Image 1: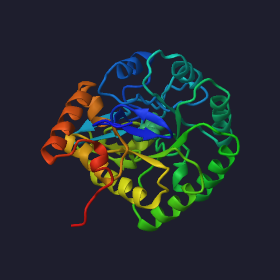
Image 2: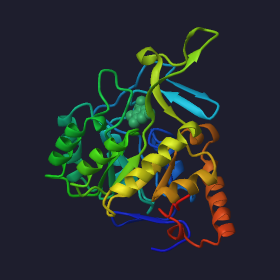
Image 3: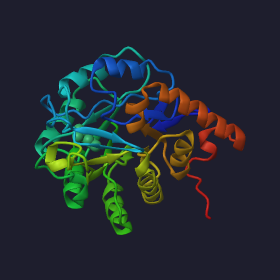
Length: 311
Ligand code: RRO
């Protein structure tokens, strides 16, 4: 498919490049419907679902500051069946990405078997990077465990499947995780989840700004843009071409969307700023991106996707 703003992941056409970051504006049917019905949204992504519904961590579990956010939501969601039913029955032709998380390998396998047996044939995304479940590690920092899970999953899962990754900070780690990921027919990687376990302190109360885990939580927002761009770029340079990239992290302006695509993103997702500004942000960013493209003489995102130049 060609178009000014478009993408294709695992044969699924997206009529646009902007999506929500999982976790923001996507926990309820009402929120998902709003994304589905907004022409500026290429696809809604559902809140990462676990087998059983969860209330999440004690509140306050989210705090916004200038150009940033810290969260320890703790996977609040309405349970896997709620989201599976939504993606199976929605009436709009727009693609939807079904995000799932799990508290163990056996739960992960169970959920993906249910997806495999369902009528949903769209893209599923396995979240291997939630930083906020008390007592649980971010799986994708353990390369052997990631390999083991993907090996088991791809023995039976035949529909499009991508994974959500945490940010990496060491070039050797990019080499090592990419070597694992390139063994599997992944539809995409979504990079990056929040930067895990930051701590923000309120000097008036002399306490952390959020309650769970002693105040430790995932960092998002414009401050993390350079980390997100580095991860998108590092993966685009290392992954098989068939593995597409959803760039997540730090997007506030149309220039930030442009930069993500230049670094190699096929789709770009919006989290903290969506929470702050509401869904009107999608239209603003789309229009702003089209303006940048017009000024530069680009007629399609294909003209500059992954085309980062040397300095
Ligand atoms: O719900 C959360 O606490 C959460 C999840 Br599942 C995630 O993947 N990333 C994040 O920053 N928060």
